[in-house]
Image 1 (tube, rainbow, N blue to C red):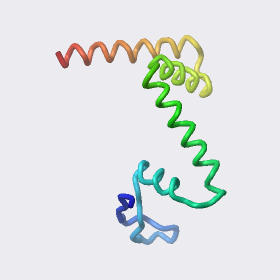
Image 2: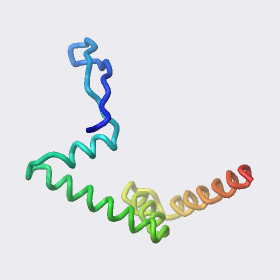
Image 3: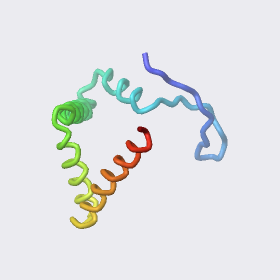
Image 4: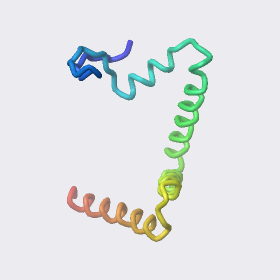
Length: 100
């Protein structure tokens, strides 16, 4: 069973109607339960993502590499990416210091 809620959302005709909604985790659970070969590519993609995240738990450097690859795919140059990663590291050090 998923954790579905009902919200009033605006329809195309401008009226607000009660609509079933679910969070991301619930959506994945629904996809997982669909007994159709048409859902299989999505299930395989989700399994691949899950495998990548588990790999990142054992090797956190993979997370940084993935972030850099995403920035490259979005068209950012190497200098910007380097500054961004260093900025994230510096911010983490600062917030860790504040926490202590």
